[in-house]
Length: 150
Image 1: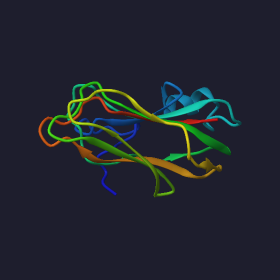
Image 2: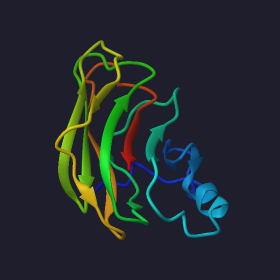
Image 3: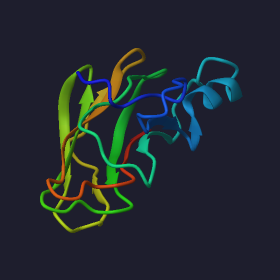
């Protein structure tokens, strides 16, 4: 899988993707929870995002290792600037297997969501996203892909 999505622990400034959970970077969330990233179930959100002013990049995200058993209750895909010349397509993966794909059409910036047919996860499962299309003319900007766990 491509390494264009990075997490907040990286110092590479050319790759704009970061991994967030509960509105904090993963590292901040782990520190706030005493190093373990939290336990138990209760409305956690895993967010993979990209800087709003940066062009989109094809490829996969860093892995988020699920710290507890839960269900994926909702996935969402949003952009600050919609793609032009083609759609933005992002796959949602559990343990490197695609469980859903969301798409924002050419010229659109409407948030797409899905809350049916989503998997359960157990502690240790890995969640990632993969951008397979970003627009052929002007790429989408400010991509945010989220998975809610509950």
